[in-house]
Length: 411
Image (cartoon, rainbow, N blue to C red; front, side):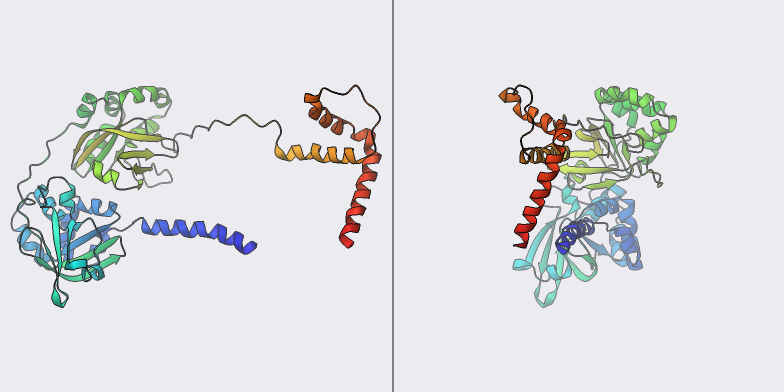
């Protein structure tokens, strides 16, 4: 029995530990940093914000290119946005470890890349064709000369594969001139799109506006409560300290760019602009169910209801509730159902009393019999109240019963 109980407690823990391991946790920048021959490729993954997107995805294959292999691509002097598209071709949204590459069904496969996932790739130009040739050679091709598989750098089965290819992939569509996103005044945008109350608070509260604006260049995602819900929250907001007000506002920003597709395809805990690395984490959890994305704090749940802008490096979404961190707010107590007439533990005592009472000799005749529908209550009251009168009889009956049971057991 103890073994079964121990297993019952242990299995959920094993399941949870396995879930944590499977859920990701890879860091492409740290992995490639251990291989100096890919330092240029690694640098541009960070500069174009692709590194963050790779880290947020659970299933991914990165086609890494050596420093020498990157030279022809860099010689084209692409701006950072076109370079991002070109490097996006080197990130496949599927798992292709070395073993899988050499065992392709039919010898070929076509995999979608992050360039295809952006929606900017016309037709099938965002797909990479993989071919397993004779003698074990594997090649990758977009719209130009193919590159060959060189070696596996890092593999986490079914989740992450980082492999080296002989040269950078090339595509005219990916390398086409890409204009920089127009400069956006964040608070003006929010004020015009239904988030004026939140925008006004950013301007009026400490250095909230400056913190948001200074993070746009490096990537920023903002969750903006609509005016109706923000106004309803104002009594709570006014009761906070100055630091508390600032923290609540910063809690609505993530210091990385997240497209709506990225939010729909990933779950997990995220840091916010309010996160300071202390015991006060100011984190919340992104959850998705199909097309619905929710933001969950230990206090409440909010849903993304619209998009104000979604252009790397900035994304702003409207939400239907103000995000409340547990560092400042307590969960509302769930409504407790009306208590039962009598708790189970207490109900047992009268039951036992009734049995002892009925087992004893008849008690002296009492008052007139209670009506039938109240008989149970009367019996309970009689059993509880008559203990003093029938005490000796009850004790005798109990002793007799115990002796009878013992006799049966012995027999």
